[in-house]
Length: 423
Image (tube, rainbow, N blue to C red; front, side, top):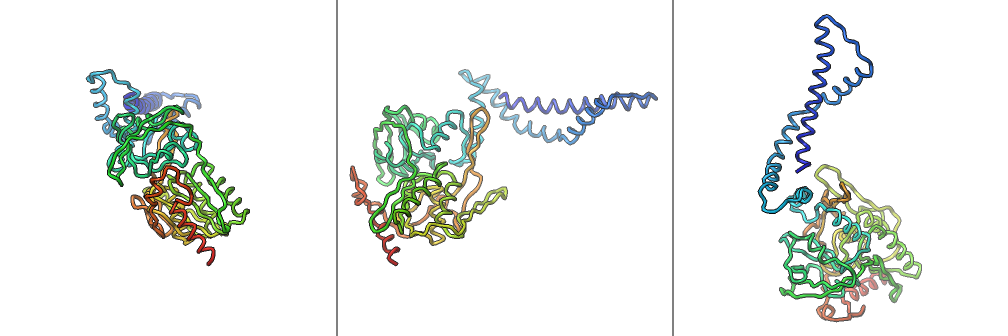
């Protein structure tokens, strides 16, 4: 309410400044000259008047009036609410609601305004260390809260939550995407405390409750180990601010230990920072296109790799929880025929966001462009189809403590990698 009224004040001040400067200058110079008198003023005053007039000579008063008229309806509504709503209205919450509304009207689940706590939580989750259950959520087109992916070896993962599951209740209260922020706050909490989620799993057309104890989430972004027959395995769980350095450190170790081929596991990887993804792709590709973006304002970008790369055969594992930056890396490797992609179709997030801090430690995310794989494919809401489709077996899904040998997707990837190396 205050900010809207301030626009009127600013416009009024501009008009008064211009008017008063013009009148004063005219009155103290031209009128007196017409009377046959001269007025001598200091150069400082003369420069001051000249500067003010120069500054505001191009002010389009009509334009600012149009802006005031445009927002007058909003101001009328807020005035009416403040005067007539049956409870007291917090001005700060009204302003916050307006800011959130500007983003929500875009009907884009990836664009949003975040208050201080929400922005703090977002930055914490991007760093890979935060309290909670270890899960990435997004609102879907049906106003439901959808799981992008659980994070490996976290309470959510151990509880058996899966990509595409829907959270429809928290501690017995129904929730949907219209209360996304409140839901995230309820799911998070002090380590050691319990939370009950009501889950709807579309693949089973069934809903059930899951009791989860919160922990301090410390994501190990990269894990690796040597397999048999000079093969390595590298698990990349997200693209955080240090992913590229960690990835290269682990790849260097694998190559040093004799790896001639590597399985890169991107399953349940929800994405992250584009620059980290590009650096990793650059280390795996020869001289080629990685990804390019297109925006409405023409601020398009191309990301290319140089000729340096690891001299190893590659197989990449993906599933429905592989999203965003994971899909950029997958698309780059697939289109450039630098790896064989194994598993299930990826999530389908082909748009890019900027994250910006705003006033008073708040912030926002805004979708600014869409990306295309090297072959020109935009995979938004479509996903990437693997070269070799291998659904995860029901037996594996139903096991309480499955082993590496039980993972049929991984075993298929190892089989294909071995064939590539033998060729």
